[in-house]
Image (cartoon, rainbow, N blue to C red):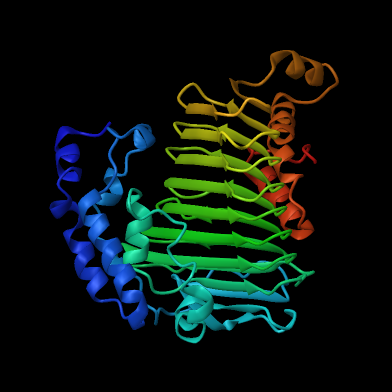
Amino acid sequence: MTTANTIETLEQPETATSRYAQLAESVDSVDWVGPLRAHALSRFQELGFPTTRMEDWRNTSVAAVAQTEFSLADAGSSHANLPQLSGEAANRLVFVNGFFSRTLSSTADLPEGVICIGMAEALTRHRDLIEPHLGRYADVESHAFSALNMALLQDGVFLYLPDGTVVSDPIHLQFLSTRAEAPAIANIRNLIIAGASAQARIVERYEGGAEASRLTLVVTEVVSGTNSVIELYKLQSEADDAFHFSTLRVDQQRDSRFTASSISFGAALARNDLFIHLGGEGSGCVLDGLYVVGGTQHVDHHTTIDHAQPHCDSVELYKGVLDGRSRGVFDGRIIVRKDAQKTNSAQTNNNLILSESAIIDTKPQLEIYADDVKCTHGSTIGQLDQEAMFYLRSRGISVEDARNLMIYAFASEVVQRIRVKDLREELEATLLEKLPGQDRSGVSP
């Protein structure tokens, strides 16, 4: 529970945020970005850190983050003790503590015209492409962490797909954290621009161990052009003492298709904010999520799908498995504007509670201002089905294996929807490793 002293501290922005002004002053950036950063810092200082008195944050306290004295990660950090790079990837951008590593990256197989580089370099070389979009979608006026991210802007991903470009192999974006002696921030800013009829699959990974608390602060803005098809798969498996705050803002144009799949296994505290704007007629999106947590982990997903034009569709499926004294939060909001006739939308959040101490707060919402729509939403919270357990036990399966089979079957529905084979197989194996109990030899997908 947040104490009175903590609340008082967080409601005094000059107390809780003054050190971030000093951090922002230490950041070097190109001249044209300066006004964006200065405005964002001003807004962050006015907003302060969110508190549990705010509706969108009432189930998630950020007191532990606000009270930690973070420094900015060093671009010259050693590459020693890095997590192993995952699998073979022809197209891969690697970041260490938030900074692009050219020696670990390879993009030689990308089609001609595609730009896939670090944001720090792109701000200088591709201002004409970036300036119309950077900061246009992520809300710095009312979202404190988006404002802080912009204020501390240093590096991240810039991906540009020209009109008609089809990238056949997945593009891997791997963000690695090294061990730190003191709490540090890895501040990451990503901008993805997909031209008309462009197609790509993107795998976004956040991994690493730490001996001191690390704050990963991510803002990703996506522009999905007319008739484009973009799939974004995110895996967060950071250290048990890490904090992870991620914001995804997507602007979709006519007849575009966007898929986002968020898999959360790691971090002590993780918050994912997703806002999808269906701004073109005939556009559609799919949002999938899976969170598997235990111990005292806390994971929070806030999603908003804004149907602003007619003939758009959205499908949303989030599933959670919670053990120990962990806590999950799902707040899903679907908005159907007055002119968004012929909308088709479905939202589902299902949760499996494995212990008496685990908590889930779920709040699916519909806001409908049109009259010719088809919208559904719902959520479930439950434990393992005892009748199904009895059925499996009656066929000679042990209690533990029967339990694990049921947990796997529940969680794997989201994993099976991932269209990158190597990632899907990796996640299936990870799910098995995370099942409770010691003997898992009898469990198979």
